[in-house]
Length: 352
Image 1: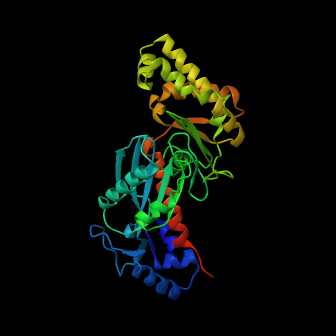
Image 2: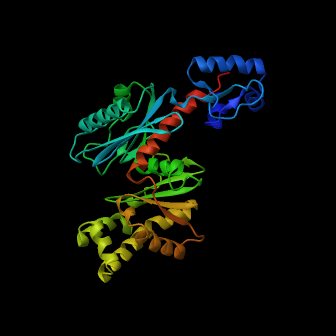
Image 3: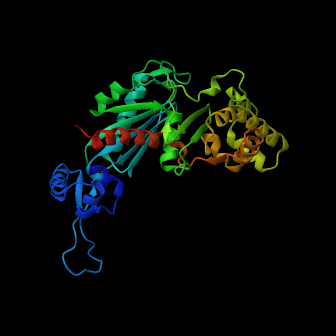
């Protein structure tokens, strides 16, 4: 019944519709519904005062009470921490961010993330917290420990579950930032209508996240999609070579728009380097789309158009190449989705 109400969304369901949907006797539905209302997981939908009145007594309608609790998504990055609070339907209730230094110790980085999470929760209404999702750089193992990290000193070996569980008192789930960004884009970003997606973070580092059949591909060690680790791959050092000449991506894009020939050549070479990494992933998993995120995605079609053309030359089938809709909030939204999956697994499980 709870799953049926959750799936129905805002309109809710009448008793008759619940009986038909769940194939459970009406008396059983009424009793179970009373229990869900008492637990604050279901609520009666009050009739619209402005709606035209019908003859006779209107049927009672009930909905999933999404505001009964909240979840928290955290993006614990190299230069920032971002917190997103949402209700149980995924509606965003608040967003907070703070800058952090790459030199912070793991303890201070986690403390900053916990403090920001608490501030975000205080500013995002009432309701108990049910779960926390955490996304971060590096290879994150199934036990929520950072196995490998090349971006943050001392970050490898960090247990992400225990300190956040201690700080918030709820279940904690963690994952790699690019994988969670892929999940976020597939949930509510530019890939929300697609089941098979490759997300490519193009910024200070270049990394990928893969979603197949709507599920994030982790791999045995949590390292699926880390093709950029290949030393011979052009994208391994593509960003550094690009900035060595132009200083900042913005300077390069401005020069390209001003029709600077050398800038156009540099961008073309950078695109060719990117395709060395993206094309093997596309040929391996055959996705519906490649989503480009990260700082360089702000170039828009300056980057997307040549990527589309080069991928079309080397791939067997055309693949859509689109920019991120969530921007630098993609990881935190993916962390929210991860937390919601944890909550829903508990809410909707059936005990024999």
